[in-house]
Length: 144
Image (cartoon, rainbow, N blue to C red; front, side, top):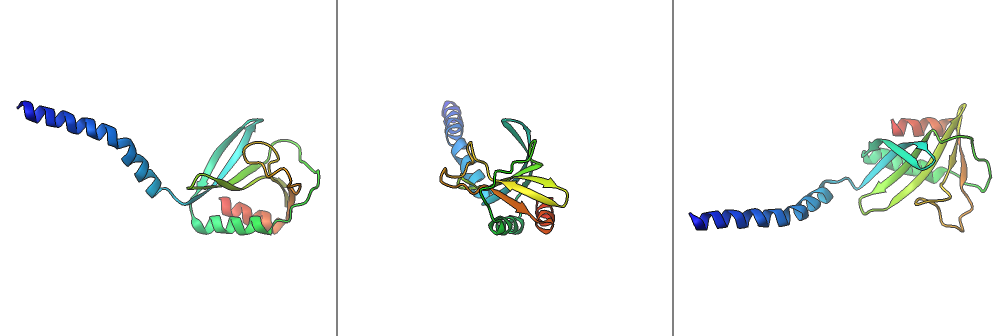
């Protein structure tokens, strides 16, 4: 009886020790490679992510749209917070395709962050792009 109790206790201790490793491994193995995150800026230093898109086709569409944007060094910065913020989070721990989007009438303005964690390199002065009505509609379809 004593051996059985000791064996059970040792098994439980071993399980408690290895459970975090198994849990981390399982999470990493089942997590998507990329997630398109859509957020809303609610204050100067807060973004609430309201939509996580794991569909690889939509993420690829977004990346293609992002690559089509022609960024310039215009100083045009819209008033207020952006209508939405988009980022692609990668399983390996890095983030790409970060933009802040303002929609005005039938077009949009996109700004890459210039400060903070997601800022472009300092030598990159091209931070502003315009979205045509068609591009804005496509972007809205992707993030819905």
